[in-house]
Length: 218
Image (cartoon, rainbow, N blue to C red):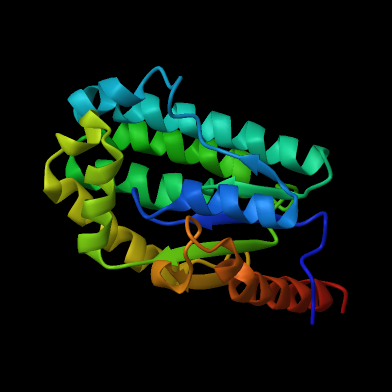
């Protein structure tokens, strides 16, 4: 049975509220890996963004792009062994594009953002994760989780935003090919009451990484 290499970098993707942070912590504990979380608590734009999408969407996306790029670079400089909460790829294809198409980011700002993203990420030299875990769920579960975690700025956001975001994630993952993908439904494991329920998930990840690394060596 393949094991996850100690130098692997695994990123977890999925819509807001799906449980990325909880899975990141649990997998890191099981594998004795380090964690990489997106900066929420000290983010200077996040609360402003939820109050005024038009004014702050560009600033927030630039901030996240810079922070995630630095995190990606740091993980590879450390030699891997990381579980990452949300990938850099979601920012442009889901969040920034949704705001541009919805009119809360100007086409000029989106073009500037996208050119910067391409210069930073879309090169042969940018290190890619060994595997992306995509968390699947139903929409009602997402809304329930957002409400339960109690971030007021999220609770007060129009539900149409969450529904549009959910739909974009479902479309995005079908075309994602930057690295291997493992799709996991949130009902397949229980990180709070039975952390060993992650063992089948870890087996899936290990097999995918082993196959991908083998194909890279051919």
